[in-house]
Length: 280
Image (cartoon, rainbow, N blue to C red; front, side):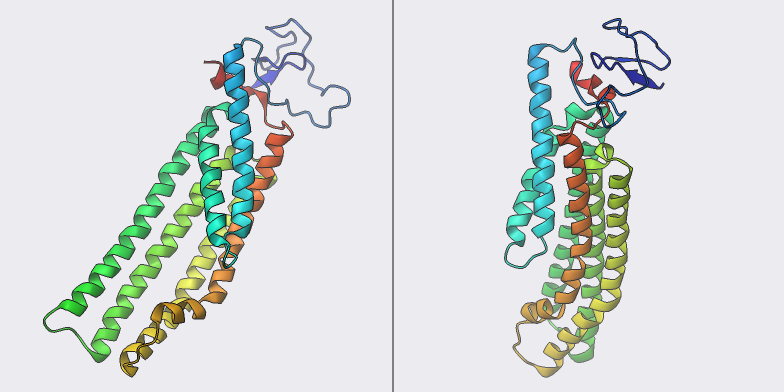
């Protein structure tokens, strides 16, 4: 059912009501004079206790700080030498958004919890694929009659393909988790930015699989056939630098989305009806 917020006290009334059920003030569909937007601002109802109001304010602050840290972290997470700092900021920011989820309504709270579950799934997928690859290599190299030459190359290539596919799928699932963290706080433009981040993640993932896999296979083939002692990990990292830079595109789009949500929270642009759950 549609609802409307009182311009005087912020209480929520049924759609079509002309008098506020809380303060008996006339309800106007027009914004107060001098207010830039007709969107009711996010504020607690008059029936909220002092303790509830303090908790509500604290959770707002946590979410705002968390969104800011997520913005900064994603903007720098793809830059060499500082990516670990970016990852730490993203982690702290996500925790703060989770802790502050209740102040923004049941739907946002559900999305945030779902984001946490989806993120765990992405980590499980990534870890599982890495473990399967490592066990496969260890089994191959320690078997009584390990394959050699082209047979070894073919087996390693198959393992690399599975590992790369798993990492890409995990990355796309992780992008969904980021999107869910702030989707309900976004205006239309913010939601479009987040959707663009998901599309970019899928497209770049497919491109990486199609273009990066031959590079990985070439490095492995050179190491096996040449009998050299090259640092395969370092060689692969150097070859895939371009793909790492491309992978920054979804991160920047996600960071932009978090910034837009941060600005909305900072400017009190979230509809007031979502505060209902904080009065319980």
